[in-house]
Image (cartoon, rainbow, N blue to C red; front, side, top):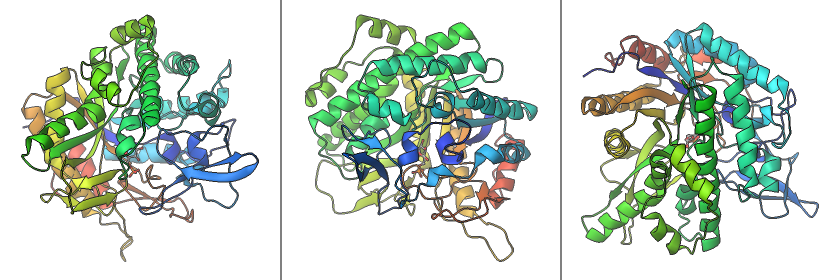
Length: 492
Ligand code: BG6
């Protein structure tokens, strides 16, 4: 069992979770810039003004503001993404450290608002374009191939307000303009592009957090938003291929495996239906170029009526992705009966799996689920696959020797690399593994810094204190050996 030659090893990040410099060099406000810090028990909030009054509403990735609201920064709230780990000013040092680990790839996203500060400008912001050019050139210097997410949970605030979080077809033009600029500008520096991060969270999060009673309007909103995003993603694929036939485009799915809690056929059927709605729906449209047959059932369940044109259908058919890419952290359990043993984590809820261990944030560690997912998806789509996020969020402690002995990260990643090996052995065309938060970053779910995934520790806490100094953890040296041996040496 071995990983293919040229397998891409690296780590993944998102602009808003590492970048900082939220208002520097012409950058406009993103939705994340009005998102406060939270914790496991306290949600993050979007802050806004409505009729002149400062208000807040719980933030769910992809959700918008109430009608008529204008996003605003509350001087009495803490916004962890404003500084994050200040990658904006530390990128040289950080990329050098990635290269020391032997990274052959680095997944990052572009902040839309650095390129188009409001989102609807005719011309891009040159300072923003220059910043990413410097990053890609730095990567090139070390032989690191970037994987670039065009939109990772950070729509321009202005567009989000104006078009009510993707409820207007005009968003298609805005995104196409933005993506086209990127494809032209970075030709020769970037090969891999992902159109949207975890596009399926629009549906997945409707019934997370124990919130099973999202109404029909919420479903209408989510399905319509997704339709416009599918169309724009397909158009981006077509445009990218025209600009550079070597470009490789992928979708990006939040990959969660669902298991039935019992052999009751009702549990088994419900599990399949949950997988269809939460996982397969988005993958099917983006990989197969049309809506699956079960889509009608999903829409009918919530009286959803979509604005879909003939041109949209043509675009979907012509703009299928070249590869399937996904994040994988955990599995969930589906039960149609009442259950007493429940999970209470961020982004995870429902019945507890008695066979798995859970992290402090309630996420189940399940490497077998990764193998299962890889095999199912490869069988379903038959295109190359990337695991573009994977990892364990945990609290790190600096020991008396000044080091960080994060054997829990190593243990988690080791098990998942073994699972990938098994899937490859089974014939899956897996081409990449980019662990999440290769350098510590702000958690998307909770806004905490203390939920750390990285090989590199960044000195900043949940209240914004710290020097931002970087330091290698034990896992840094471990991952270096893994990469050097192309996944053969998983020992400490
Ligand atoms: C994925 C997102 O959902 O999971 C990332 O693509 C996110 O942006 C990651 O950070 C881990 O989630 P969290 O809540 O621990 O940051």
